[in-house]
Length: 231
Ligand SMILES: Nc1ncnc2c1ncn2[C@@H]1O[C@H](COP(=O)(O)OP(=O)(O)OP(=O)(O)O)[C@@H](O)[C@H]1O
Ligand SMILES: [Mg+2]
Image (cartoon, rainbow, N blue to C red; front, side, top):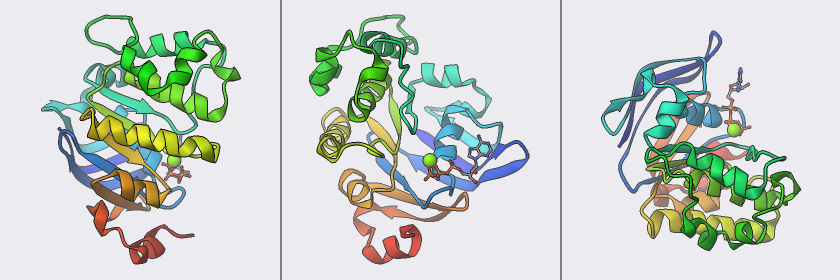
């Protein structure tokens, strides 16, 4: 579904992602792990086309992503929930959700009902401004907005970072359900190893923009965590 082969990605002249290869199949759940500043966010931004330049192969459902604009990548079914959420504060919850529908291929502007079933709080606060919601609610809105385009693959960047502990478990469980019950393919950037282990089937550990280690999530031992992920 999504294949990278010897992928490089740059900000200006600096190579950030270097020689990264992976293969994500439909229904997979892959976690991207690594310490601060190793390039996790940059890898997601590379997939959606937000870095200055890339080299190497990047294919999605047989199409060459490297030549596609960010908007076209979204039209092809790639949804991205950025680190820090980036909900539009002055827009209402409804307006934020409708924005997500603009990446739909079928031109529909209706927000699918299941989003409100997953996140009842969005229904309750439909007329409130995004900026007035709590951090946890904004994260739910950001995920809801990404789902409103009915994507084929969802890229999530540290979705539980900086969120009240009582909401974290709720968001984690919904992310797991999206994959296991609804079959959505997910790439998750995480620093929370226990969530990554619980949620994903595969992991990729980055170090200085390169793949340091990859494997099955159930092989993520405490030793690996100490060696590659602790500070
Ligand atoms: N817009 C940018 N322009 C230039 N360099 C950048 C930009 N964004 C990130 N970088 C650099 O790219 C490298 C990787 O950053 P990135 O944000 O991808 O790391 P990360 O693994 O997501 O870190 P964190 O865990 O803190 O979110 C860092 O050296 C960073 O300084
Ligand atoms: Mg990051």
